[in-house]
Image 1: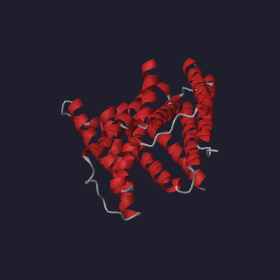
Image 2: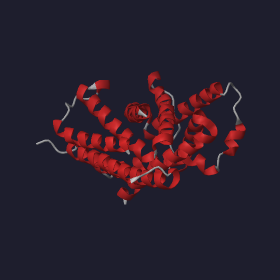
Image 3: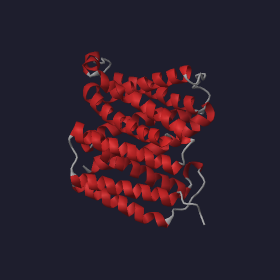
Image 4: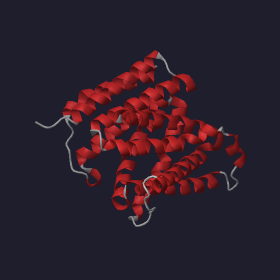
Amino acid sequence: MAFILTLAFVNGCATVISKMINYRCTKYLGTNNGSLVNYVVASVLSFILLAISSKFSINLYSFSQAPWWAYLGGAFGIVAFIISMITLSHLKVMESTILLLTGQLTAGILFDAFMFHNINLKKLLGILLVAAGIIWDNKISHMPEK
Amino acid sequence: MYALFTLLAGACQSAMGSLNRMLTDYVGMFGMSLVVHAVGGILLILYMKLFVREKLKISGMPWYLYSAGFLGIFLVVTSSYCIGVLGVSVVTCLSVTGQLVISAVIDHFGWFGVPRIPFNLKRLPCFALILAGLIIITLS
């Protein structure tokens, strides 16, 4: 359990590092191409890892077994990316961070409740406390210095 | 209007996490990562060609910046794995906390050449509140 909790935390740390690298990519190639690099390299690397991990006999049947909507994850990711690119210049950083988090958590709680059935009142309370702490921290961090 | 769309973008990220989790059950983590990045990449190319009419270009960066792709795989694989055990909302809480903590550390020490911003002690109560929430989640 401690391992999974740490891994989810490390996932957040890696997100920041990845955003910093991506930001530098966009300095060379522009916003869209800078992100496209990430997708191209990750696709090629994933294919190589898939080939090696399946001992060079990729099970295509398993790909046909998955329901079509399970393939939409990447599409939702791109929609999120394009929306945040467009809206970022029209909102304050603090506003957009809080809005993204609120959307993420609201949808997350709904998915947990109706798809994964693993939510309870205590967990909900914890999630709300974390969200309050993050939003509060955002307000303090973005307060103008006096 | 922009606010509403930003909320929607957040919801899309959670949807992506849930769907990736389900796809992993069928095709494994590397298969999932391949599908997610290939689908995302193709849609991004379509968006660039049809809507913004931008030229595609992925060469001409220092070699180490290409490691972003490696991190991309790490991110989808670990989040899908954790979501399977903890659920989407809890993973979001932990991941965003990780983002806050590492950002504070990077700013404080000025790592990776960012301007040094010493840690603001006023933020401590917020971190305490987050920690309290995470403890409640762990105990539930």
